[in-house]
Length: 202
Image 1 (tube, rainbow, N blue to C red):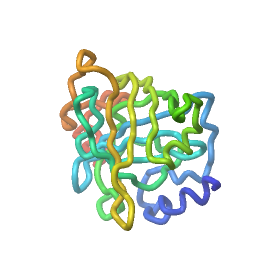
Image 2 (image 1 turned 30 degrees about the vertical axis):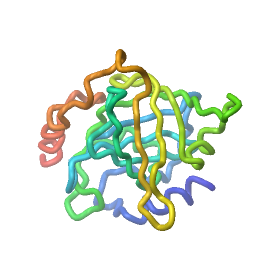
Image 3 (image 1 turned 135 degrees about the vertical axis):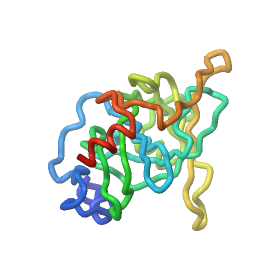
Image 4 (image 1 turned 180 degrees about the vertical axis):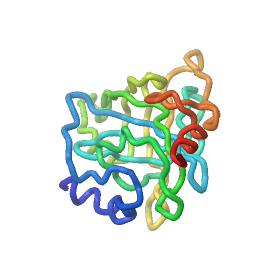
């Protein structure tokens, strides 16, 4: 499926004369290694948006509590619409009344390494592993590092689809969970949500 088709839902929810979010009309190459981005989104409910580049779009999940560096934490991840690749750089204020109205910062970004294999240990195409409901990958970000897994646990027979995002590893490698989103700073600009919101009002 072409990016144009994959982005139909994304574009249908937004008025690009009002929001500064990228429309994705200018398709760009993704580079040699696939990218990931984690954005903090202070909308009607504060949450983290976790996005992985798969082919020519960003596959996206809303994670209420954010990704954790602690292998003991299982974080629910609810799929959202595919986003254009240039959304990984978006930071700013989505106007009130627009879909997702609120402030967005880029909390982390980088590249990732697909690690999905079949039961015989053979590599599996990453998009295919997501279709099957289980994908593993290693993040190389400024804040997030190491191996993670996304596993679908709900979504059959009309249920709303839901996944779990888990940091793989032993308890010895446990991290410190997720930071307070209101104190967190953008990896791109060093600003907090409050500072981005204030700048957007100027």
